[in-house]
Image (cartoon, rainbow, N blue to C red):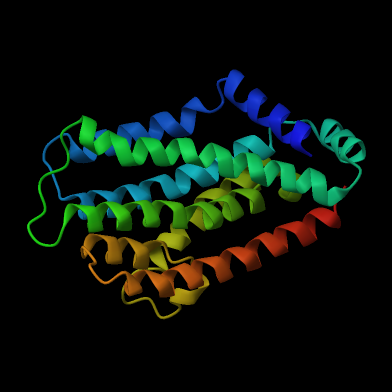
Length: 228
């Protein structure tokens, strides 16, 4: 599995397919902070939302990178469907770290961060890092569910990717009647923007995110096992 994961990550990076979602994230963050600065908590609340669909898109690109026959051969070479499936998800998770580095560092580079008006910078940085790490599993899950291996058709895959990302934001709004149908993307952003000094506020969204991601990834694994 390690060899397969390394091969997929290397192919993703060397083929240049990694550039499209990352450049899109850079453009959105640059536009947002090109005209003014925000506190680290506010900035990271925004960037955690921005990179969510980017990581989902990146995951779809990674999982769609191989032709169907090559993917089936990889399953045979690894020796199990679970190993082949896990290799793709691991690569998607590792690749997401690059998006997180950009989202955390770019606001500083372009002068988009100003001193905190209340609270401490350390608390904002910790909450910001937490918010970005929290979006990775659900974003990978949405990208996986929109992959060609499941939906076969490029149009349905694009619809699932865009629709899933939008629903994750819309259903997570403060007045949503069914917030638990979405990952805790927006609640985590609100906690981060509020400059939490009580880190107990991070616990509930964390548990929510773990449970939501586990369900989505279990559905993905189940569907992959029933499709060649």
